[in-house]
Length: 492
Ligand SMILES: Nc1ncnc2c1ncn2[C@@H]1O[C@H](COP(=O)(O)OP(=O)(O)OP(=O)(O)O)[C@@H](O)[C@H]1O
Ligand SMILES: O=P(O)(O)OC[C@H]1O[C@H](OP(=O)(O)OP(=O)(O)O)[C@H](O)[C@@H]1O
Ligand SMILES: O=C(O)c1cccnc1
Image (tube, rainbow, N blue to C red; front, side, top):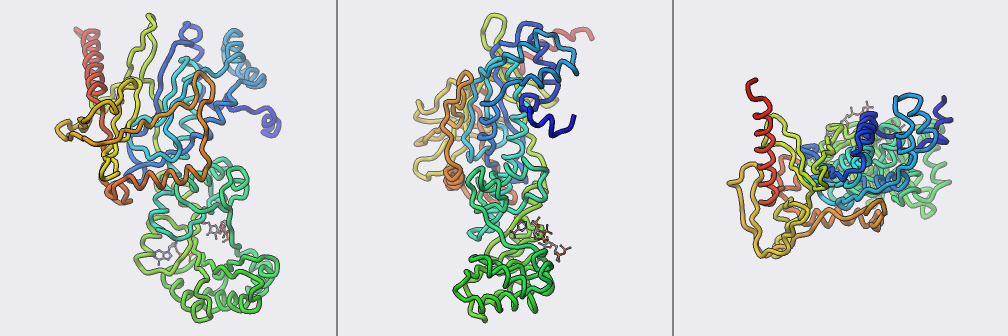
């Protein structure tokens, strides 16, 4: 079958790894598919050596969950390819979302080893949605974080996202453009992303325009006669000797008929050339014309260019943003933390790796952001069992989950819960903020973070602490699991 033919009847129900459906089948056959389970999403290490990540992806996850159902062609495909019985196929046919989803808000700053999103409900349904949830969060959170790093580097300059042509296919371009805007970009060049999400769109011109007209003067003039706002691309032949003089010539001829916004340079030594170009523009009476720069830029090159005194006012960033060039994966995982037992009681679960202390934390949780009332800055995050509430205490004991001798008592604080109800028993209960509000939320959140955690090189490690209850239940469970292993392996 051709992709176009499938496309008409495509659904995201099958956008999952085969092992998820195979596990669903086992749960179904063994009568535990409807048992209540809790899974949580977290990652283990901040991306790009950053001090935090910017959470993005919830909107796409909501869209996916709202439309989650198997189409007849999906069921037909499973029947043809796998060995499932008809009862299971019927079970999938009638599957209706019953999940309760709690999540941080998009634009929240998130840190390693704390739950970003929590899925509770029938075990089989929890399993089905794992792949898509990770697919979305891993990409969008990674990209929004990269965007925040690039924003930090350009400071208050203009910042345009140019990544579509180098993105890993269409979805990455679109959702990557959205993540860019959330993380701090001003605009995208992708027109569809502008239409879909309301992101401001912007663009200059390509070398093909100059080549098509055969001369810079002809090309700039033609563009100026057909557009009010003009940024001329000046590096096709010789930026300083030909590109900029031609741009100035056309700007002089057109006068008020155009807004001569500036010129873009896309090659060469950007520090040296931008200084020359600035002088040419100033000398010609265009001190307000801006210099736009692009060409494989990222936060490192930008910081270096600024150090060299480059006269660049606006930055266009493509490849190294959209592909998260220096770290292409966030590594977020989805772990079972609690499951209903045969007596209908919830039992904590965990997977112990070779280093037990680094094992994931069991139990259904809440994350609290602890903010000092006087400094109005965060003291750290406090991960508790879901039913604990630090707003009831006058003082909070916070300790490092590994090196417990590193601890402090915090008083006069505000504790804000970060996991919010998004779906309750399959029903959407969350009102999604506008994209602009999400973008502002990121900026406000960054205001609450000490500079030590915000710097892009070797930031301090932000405290993500466990409540005493959670810590003790983790230790007890580790002991319990070890004891059982010892008993079972006795004599071997
Ligand atoms: N002054 C500078 N300091 C540090 N990096 C720079 C400077 N100027 C440009 N760069 C960066 O160096 C890289 C390579 O620049 P180079 O001059 O080779 O590009 P180019 O002239 O456009 O060549 P090509 O046409 O092959 O892209 C780009 O990522 C560019 O952003
Ligand atoms: O360098 P990036 O960060 O990826 O930014 C996007 C790049 O895409 C364009 O180049 P391309 O060679 O595709 O087209 P053009 O030069 O002909 O416009 C543009 O000139 C940028 O250099
Ligand atoms: O508008 C631009 O200048 C642009 C857009 C996409 C890629 N490169 C440049």
